Amino acid sequence: MVRNRCFARHCGARQLTGIVVGLLLLVGVALGIVFFMTRGPDASSLPDDAAAALAKLKTVQGRLVLGKEYQMMEYELWVERPRHLRVEAELQGLDRKAVFILMFNENEAWTYDPVLHIATVADRTKTPPTEGSLVGTSLLETMPDDVLAALRGGDVQIIGEESVAGRDALRVQVMLPAQNPFDSGQLTLWLDKTTYYPLAIEGDTGFRMRFDFIKFNQAIDPLTFVFFPPPGATVRRIGE
Image (cartoon, rainbow, N blue to C red; front, side, top):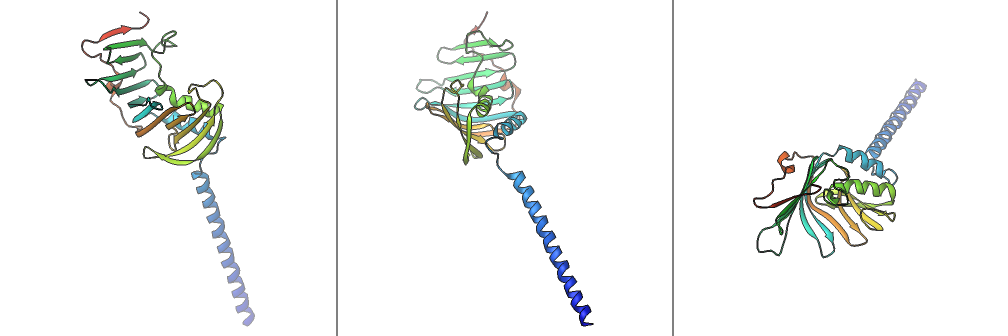
């Protein structure tokens, strides 16, 4: 009888040990899955992760400052990828309200200069839009793709995480090759952790871009990307 009780206790202890070990293994597997799913990207995978996220991005709306050091301007931005863009900036120091407008869609690229009261339009169905002209192009349109090219072609280091425009962002430093759209040898980027859209950029030549408000994948009124020249404006068509 004593032997049977001892055997029963021994078996019970072994079963309890087995259960504990099994639970520990399950916890370990669960923690491993959580770590794998929540871990941040490393420098080598960052370009592919960014490309996959940007491919899913549909629209961007926000307010940002852009320029070089003491020549910064504030812009309102609407983007519907890949071919729709509208940018507005109110010019300061004038005796009247004057809003600079840049508007692109699949067919046309409009630029409105409120000081000269001239609206310039270029054909967007041509590539490049206008031979030898910057009309029909904008860094604000190509920026995420330019950043992706920088990630692929530069020496990338992930520095940490910060908040920009109320969103979690990866802070990334990139050493660039000699020829690049940012005309900088080194960029510091703040990439949105969900969309990988650039929330801020700083170059070593003084170039700066930073959003103070941004939202993604919200519906935009299609009329945003249709331009109507203000009454009395001179309309100049490039290439005609």
